[in-house]
Amino acid sequence: QKEVEQNSGPLSVPEGAIASLNCTYSDRGSQSFFWYRQYSGKSPELIMFIYSNGDKEDGRFTAQLNKASQYVSLLIRDSQPSDSATYLCAVEDGTGGFKTIFGAGTRLFVKA
Amino acid sequence: KAGVTQTPRYLIKTRGQQVTLSCSPISGHRSVSWYQQTPGQGLQFLFEYFSETQRNKGNFPGRFSGRQFSNSRSEMNVSTLELGDSALYLCASGEGGLYGYTFGSGTRLTVV
Image (cartoon, rainbow over all chains, first blue to last red):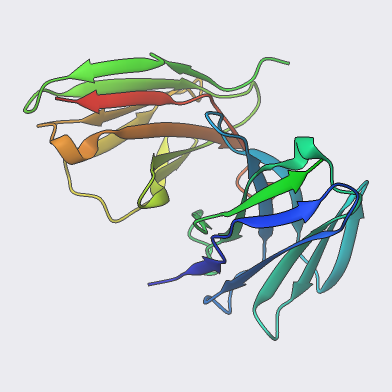
């Protein structure tokens, strides 16, 4: 059973701080990795995707990938109360099975 | 650009009945995936369709089925509903999964 593991949280950070969200995955063949944000009562929204080892930055968000360690992370700089949501790590099935596996999500609270 | 449209938004059904949910993807997106979301299990993959072909199916009983039409619109059907089928059913469309998916607002199914 291929798995994507996340700390369920909640993770609480003060406004302006860096929030660090982590994810590990079991399928060594996975090539595509995603972070989705889900506000309470809403559907998931894609915020980042990454394919290569290293960092990928988009505004206040940085995704980090380490395939050797099977580890993906998301950093949110200058966290805002509006960033309070559940963050879902997702991994594309490594067998080319056209299936995205989601972690259970980490709840983030940004305190004003 | 119109988003992913799911109908109906809410549905209440009785045990033993069947239900059909509809999803219209973003124009140009040929990949449609379906997920079941519950508080206890998170997002669980149901199936993925691309150009009318089911390319992958999750670990759900045969009561769950789907199809995709030539215009990429998709439907999923659940027969012989059980109480445990109560969930939010999310449809997501994309360009084959490489760049992630855009989710619809979901159909909230309650089985009584």
